[in-house]
Image (cartoon, rainbow, N blue to C red; front, top):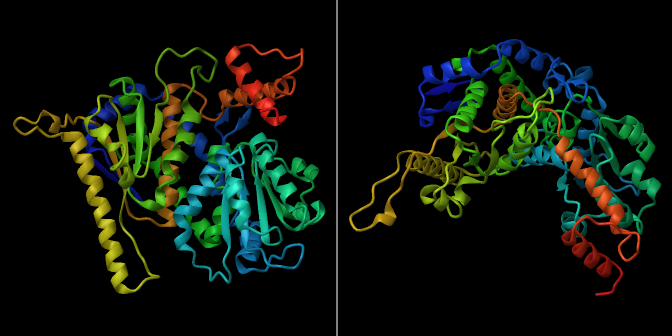
Length: 500
């Protein structure tokens, strides 16, 4: 079964269900008012019940578009053009050459994925090299690698945090503030080397970021759905305003497809139904994301957060306990590399799984001469052929030769194939929006709130509490509930105090 849309084709032949069977299943499991709920989402009227606000990420690529606001004559576009042209000067008069995006979760995964996937499409006559880096880990490991290759005088930092209180993010920011001290004052750094992106303008102001260097987005946009907003600044800086705008247009086209097409022709909805069928009827608890284009290598990481943070719930949206499976475990990796790593387990292991293969059929390579272009096209073809071959073997299997039972392949593994003719900013936007809508539809079927993350928030609270406790290690006041945690904290205390 093959369904086409403007930028994306879904081949669900290897799901092993006819179109009529999946349509009948959809009528069975979808809520009766699905059409109304879908319309609410696209209009920005769907309610995030637990947080008491509307869900508005679809509006971020339509009427609340940061690129087209005031016909493109806005601060977002101006800042991108200043930085990409080399006209943004640091505190000592030198042009900014490097930008470091400091964020975590949705403030890192989406911008990093988009910047990497679309960088080659920049067509705005960039006048000087602007290098964009990403830092998210609270342990400082990424900063450790980035700081030696940048200069405080020529580096601008994006502090990206919806709440502007995220501990992971500000642990990195605090280290940066110590790093710039030999070259810049704190005032110089804030005035010329920092941009804030948050849902809270007041917190950015309190931190000392000038209003002209603040970008806000609506509270109703969840972090994992926020790459379409000012959180996507790093994408625009990597690729240019035109590319960022085209990405939004591609996502908007998929919004229209999701909102207008019937079930039998609706790609996100069909993907949602196949996923639920595999989860509920086939008892398969995981989905592998396998992109066969190097520009999409961060797609599995991004979708892991999008799906698992949204639908990994054990209570319904009205706080009733759930006694059925909800969202699957999302994992995966870059397909050509996976063939030489975990594909052995896929072909001959004993666990059940489903997979989404993502393939790009062709690519333009205009920056190279004709001979190199021809070779690159051959490589793209090689990737497509490998994708199709492995997917085929996983579904149909193969019999063993005589006396060699170890060469048998059981097959039977269900998968979908997402086909993009050419990766462009528009097709990329359409692909990501497809998965957003799939997750939303599955959340409705699972009866969960896909737009909160109480488990994440509780983990943060516990980490803060444990941090307070760790300061008491070595005193009689410490109270730690288990010996395992106590052992590690005591070792940490000794190392910090130089006792080991």
